[in-house]
Length: 437
Image 1 (cartoon, rainbow, N blue to C red):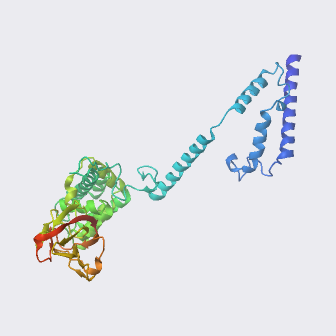
Image 2: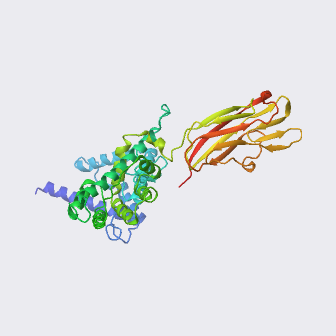
């Protein structure tokens, strides 16, 4: 080693020793070192060791000054000069604090949403988060995800409901296929399976998304059931599919159908229910997604689907004016009726009648008249439900029981000479939806 090289090494060591002394002086003077070393347990990581933060930032500060580097201006120390140039670049950097704040906010929002997703479903994918941050598991409500919005330019079809119906039908038919597969694997003869239990379990798990442990147990239970009982022979139908559409097209909805929709003996109901419980969440969501891509207008027949809003008027120049409702009113729906307007008679200008009341302006007497409601399952409102209003605007809701049908709402004109009546009543009927559970 040359004397010149030896001298340079000594110079470097002197620089490092002096730099270390300066750092110790700085940190001791301004920021006493914590008793816990930076890498000692339990504060293993810098991000968790806030006591060391001011110390480290003190080091960074001194590295950005000439004082931290002896002979920084000496051309023989090109490395030091390069570091100083780099530090000047760091010092000159500008930060868009608003952009940084927004980026931090976005990152925190995504993190919180991922936590919420895992709380809801145990996963962070195949999960729905709406614009307000509400987190839902699409498989728990039948896999409602990425459904199209209703297009107002196509009033004859609700695209969202049609896609939901398509998904519900796919789920319903997948259930039938699953139960038929169980029947075919065992065979038609009670007590004599054509496929071994182990093979049947393997086939079902390979064919359908399942919870492996639950499905193995359910297939074993089914094989025991078939020792003395016939095939399940489950068949779908529009009634079943619309039931699933209305109830959520998921495992719970199917189990409700086994109670509400079919008259199975208890042993059969439990056997079928156990089989369906063995299906995984992916079964419901994946088949729903496939069906949603093939919309169906069968949603119109579903018990929960609202009928179209209907408006009409009563020109009160007759003793009795009737309106026949066009839509088929569905049972267990609550309908809202809005009435407005009034009429009088040129021979009796002191009496004003509206949809429900006759008001004598001279005496102030108000007499409840109302309508004649000829709709099966709907009763006429009483006076207490529609108290008199001077503006002649009324809203009343009626619940329909019984079957699905239409009917007539008739308004009587109590004036002696109806042809002399002046005025018109307007009416609107809105289906508020199914009130039955």
